[in-house]
Image 1 (cartoon, rainbow, N blue to C red):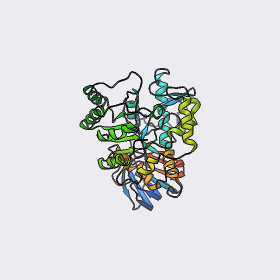
Image 2: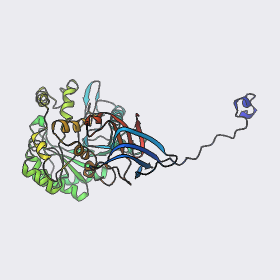
Image 3: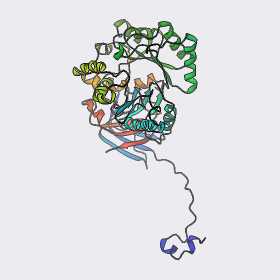
Image 4: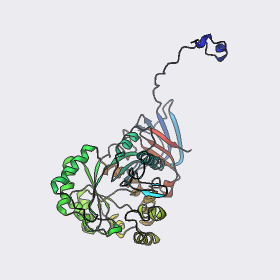
Amino acid sequence: MKSVQSHPSAALLGVANKPPLTWELPQPKRPIALKAATLLNGKGGTLRDTVIVVAGDRIERIGGPIPEGAQMYDLAGMTVAPGLIDTHVHVTYHFNHDRFIDNRLAGQDEPVPDSVLFGVENGVRILEAGFTTVQSLGPGTAWDLPLREAWARNLVPGPRLLTSLQWFRYDQPGQAAQPDPELRAMVRDLKARGADAIKIFASTSVREGSRPTLTQAQLDAICGECNRQGLRSVVHAYTSAVKMAVQAGCTAIEHGTGGMTDETLALMAAKGTFFDPTVGVVTENYVANKDKYLGVGNYTAEAFAMMEKLIANPKPPEEFIRSLTVPGLKIVYGSDATAGAHGHNAEGLLYRIKFGHQDAMQALVSATSLAAESLNLGNEIGTIAPGMTADIVAMRGDYLADATALRRMAFVMKGGKVFKYQP
């Protein structure tokens, strides 16, 4: 075979005297500088006209000069905030051929690669909406863990993912919870499989009457084992199941409707139990996509009639309004996003502010530093401060004056890598 140097046209191509191709050594990454007109730090603080310097995956400093040679992003006219956190999603739920596919069906009535790629698509939507961390609360699929690892590598666009893998659920006819030793063993098994938290159904769905499904002793066994194993326990609870779950020492209550009495709210505040009311997204999404949900599982005509009545007069549960006045109660943000809602995760924050009269700064804190604390990640994410992971977003407009800025995400950085920039 002739060498390239001997080819008659080689000199004309300018390659006659070049050495063979070799891999170039990686060059040191330049620091990144973000010019912020308005910075909300995630803990209620505000800074004006400052600079955030990012080195690698960490925030190096706030303020001071722009480093020489830095990659600069001008975020003028925007509100800069920590990456948002949604503590309750179902990240692999999706529509296929205009029908709802939940995790109990995914991979059974569609090829597994299709299900995985739908999850990847959901991740892109979530990240572009400014949510850099989400918690997926079961029932998980075998690909929750590969998705978690892929997104952790920060090459494929997607949020930081925490997953419960599965859930404890005994709400169908003929189902009964196992004896307490087996319940505790199931917690240990999920931990060994890589679960970040344990999801527990302590009551039926609202669509099925909200009745308790576990005894106090059973909740004590599950949540007690979670505490012994260093795992968080996240409990779907309505009516009397709420107080039972709080007494069992659970980490967080999801939903809570019908059970947030003054006594229970005070008990939650005293115990440090987190409360995620999940208002403003889930029911609205079901109704908006009624044609895709109707007839699947418990998505019946009767259930939709109830949901349509609820959103005809948009108003958060009275219990949520009351919860905002309880001193020390830790109210976090979770959307319960399922198929159709991914990428619209912030709508629940807007709902709280508009209809629940929650202060806009308080709402942001619930979806940043407080949400991070609920995930045991308060020292890593949820706050813009030196040493924290560089999860930073910017939205067009003044969020504190007009919270709909949440719908106008123009900049998204996760772990020091910029995934979206629309100046």
